[in-house]
Image (cartoon, rainbow, N blue to C red; front, side, top):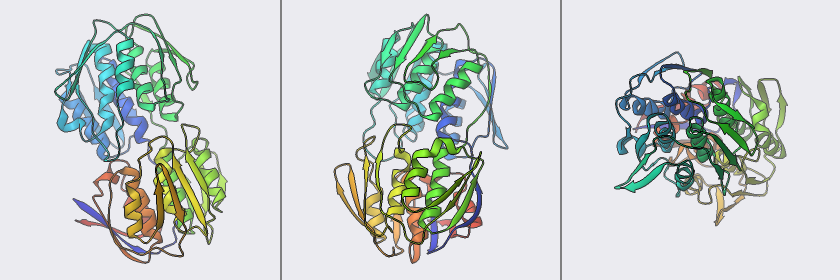
Length: 417
């Protein structure tokens, strides 16, 4: 295991590029299983989660090559329809292979997922949707066994807007016989990205980007080539780091239109933000203003930016609140921020943050991808040395973040733990 050693405080300055979106790449990789042939995905970040999904596809029998951020997946000779526990337990997105396997290959055996160490995130909506499409689903010894001679269209109403369930059901429905109507779909850009890629590959999906989508099943999905959208959470993380350190950072190769809620919240904090066509210039204030943030489904404030925003608010001149309505127990970063002298009180899914004049360096431990980036932001503000342990979490979602931060002036090193 590695750790990050950060000496602060510092003021970030310069320009940084965003990579392709992890949360868009992983379902696209799973979607390649719908086709028979060679799919090409461009602008792919070099992440642990991408490597995990690559290994899973290889176990299924796909040929996978990754070079210069281009991923080539050959699905013409699949030999296995099982996603094993050893891989799925490390990354929840592995569950995405279930729908494509059942739709294109009539059955799937997928371990129940693991992933980040916070809270239960049930997959009942995934199973419900597959059953509505005619699949037989059984849970046995920690595995989900699903099968269908051919899925059939149905009306599916999601009781809550779920990114994972929407993406899973889209991939399954494109090969189902007849028409499928999905209601209360997730609107996140990564879901829209998946639907557009599927349409390019021959799917017939109407209402892309709407709460209701209609899918007319086709007999085959063709191999596709697709360039992945910029990672909005990575861009938001660097914007938050600029505000937290009173720095000035220009974030390039991004899509500002996907970050409106985050940029609005940072503006409330006192940031001066200039938006370009594919760039964001963020000037942080000398002292952060308090803010009150509530996470919502897109286009609301994303839960994946909750931890980073909380780190920013640790140095606000007053009291702020952060409420997570998506994952109500996603607060494993709070005890670690307290170790850095933050003043945070939890009341259920509400965090009350009393701003302090300065944070203090200390050893802390990362518990998930976004908690890791929040601890980095806090360490950049803190006086003295901070050791962040278990940085394999951040390697799952950010490509070489320490190199990007060093180019912005941060004193950060990767070292053996």
